[in-house]
Image (cartoon, rainbow, N blue to C red; front, side, top):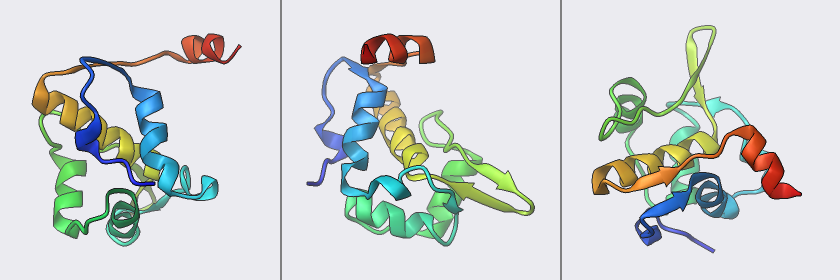
Length: 116
């Protein structure tokens, strides 16, 4: 099942639920695993979105962002790493910023209450 970023149209969205929808195409184990930004991220994006992105574009998302949204990365030693969840969140937030749509972000306490 492939979910595209363009399929998100609601004016007020629950960001965590939309991230989970984008991650459905990946095995549970790989969703929160750190992968090298410039070596592993292009392969993750191809599986998630269905198209290939150049390494320089992914690096630019981490450094300067897109539509005011930066790609979250972790610096380990001299290398930058990213997870599939961070990539999905970046896609949704930047798409919403481009459209001017407000995304509802839940705090951890709200997520816990929602589970019960």
